[in-house]
Each structure stands twice: as C-alpha cells, then as structure tokens.
Length: 303
Image (tube, rainbow, N blue to C red):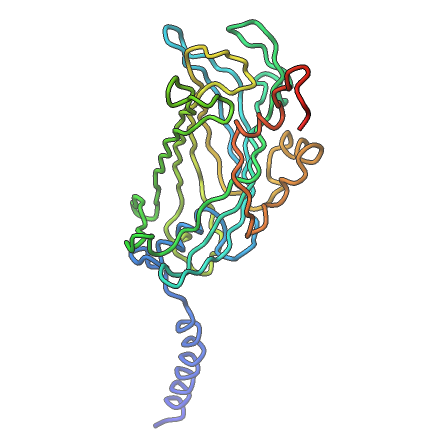
C-alpha cells in the first residue's frame, strides 16, 4: 500500500470515528403508536416534558350574545392566559403518567379602547354592572397514564398531514350550578356549556425527544350560560367566545394589558400551583360566589 493510500485510509477511519458517536447518539423520535409515546406527546402539547417547568398559554378573541329572535351582538373582546406545569405520576399498573396543575385568567376588554372593562352596560336592561374578571385558581387535571383504569392503552388521537398535526377536543359540561338552589333536577338551573379546543403543531418538533416543550397553537370556543355578573335574570340566550392563541416562550410575551393587571391585582398568576396541589377546581361560578356572597337575612345568627 502506497503512502497516499495509507494516508487516505487513516483519514477515512478518523472521519468514521468522529462521525459515529454523533450518529449513534441521535435519539429516536417518539413513537406515537405506543401508549407511552402517546402519553408523552399529550404531555408536550399541554406543558413541558420536564417536571415543575412552568408553561404559559395565551389566547385572545371575541365574545358574542345569542338570543332567539335577534341578531348576535358583539359584547366585548377577551384576553386569556393559563400558567401551568406538569409532574410525573407513577402507577404500578397503569405506568408512568403525568398530572397538570394550572391557574387561568380571562379578561373582558373594551373593543374600542383595548382596556379592561371595569363596568359594562347591559344592552337588554340598560343597567350598568360591575365586571368580574375570571380568575380561576386552580384549574387542575386528573393524571393521564399510558393505560386507562379499564386497562385499555392510551391512543394519540390527531390528524397528521405531512409535518402538520392537529386534534379536536370537545368538552360538554352539564352539572349542578353552585349559584342555583337545591332543586335543580326538579325545576332546572343546571350549568350547561361546551368548550371546544383545537391544538396544532409540527410533527418533527412534537416527536423530537430533545425538544421538551415544543411550540403549540390553540383555538378555543366556549358556549355557555350568561356570565353571572351580567345580571341577565334568567333571560333566554347564551354567550359564546371564539379565541385563538399559542404556547409562549416567556411569561413577558403576554400583552401589556394582561401584564399590568397581573402585576397589580393577580401576582399569584405568575407561577402555577405546586404539582401536588390538592384543592378542588375553581370555575367562573364558584369564583363569583366567593366574591359576591349572599347577605344573611336581617337578624339571622352569625356563623
């Protein structure tokens, strides 16, 4: 073998030696067809694959009325956020799963000025009412595991076209209204609403095990009873909110109208609850009840 051939052989061997560790170390994409892969991907949509790493979702949109016999009216704009984190939860039968804990804000915004509404003139009663911004703490989820309580495997339910994926989550709500009386089953008053979510993202980012918190976009629609602060007194109709947003890289990417209000009024919303938060979830209705308790009748004994 000539000197030139030996030199080429040495260089080729050296190049292979350098390249091999990089190739060998490249992790395999998350397999969405497995229960474990589906569970991890679902976690990365909602938060980070790392425990106790805060994530912020932001969304904005519009709120409208729907009343039988009249055109829908635009009532206000909305700005919303949810600060969250996930923690690993292990089950000896169902496998390694995760739990999400969060706080959320939904602000009602003047479409003309872009400022938060402090008061709102009800167009049906012509009365001006005080606006109660939605500040739910906590909004937590039950743990999600690779296998359900019935033993069935968790499945990644999304549509994929090329490198794009999206899924649709519809959440019908029908439960006893905390602001209504004791006979809701007999005479009505149940809380009735529907929340509709769409999540969108890139497949290569979602399945990359090194990308623990990939960019995600979200669409949100809520159809619900009138908000209690609107003082609608049982009038026929409902409100619907149509909004869209995304997962943020940093908390300070929230719009200034939200950052200012969080700093002055809702400082706790800069961080999510602890991963082991045991509290019951807050809703717009339970929050209203706390802020506007019914006054005790005159002469009633104090509790």
